[in-house]
Image (cartoon, rainbow, N blue to C red; front, side, top):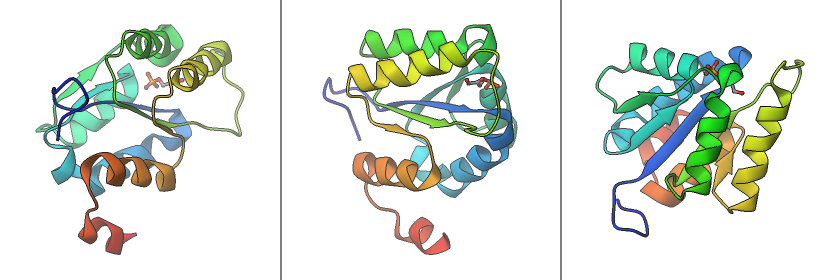
Length: 139
Ligand SMILES: O=C(CO)COP(=O)(O)O
């Protein structure tokens, strides 16, 4: 599957601490379909995904609170991403809340498909990569 510029798809995966286990489990569920996707991720989220799935193409950026959210925001501005999967923790205060807001704001400004939960992440994946019947049955 390619994007509008004919390249392979590029996704950003980000999760707050309380939801890191959830994003790793979600990636595991869709691992086969993600094998051709280039993944960019904030530092700690990316390390967890790489540790669980060493075969996936995951580039780790800075940790979110240290600028990783802003690096992903810059990629959005530069048209270098096709989707953002961002499992936010809506129940905890974040020291870098301004960065979180900036990232979700830029995804909206540039109309980038963005999911903040499993169900919307599934919809984006199904929309961009086609429906996976086995994964859909497993949920
Ligand atoms: O804080 C984050 C997103 O706002 C995520 O960053 P890490 O993946 O480095 O924990």
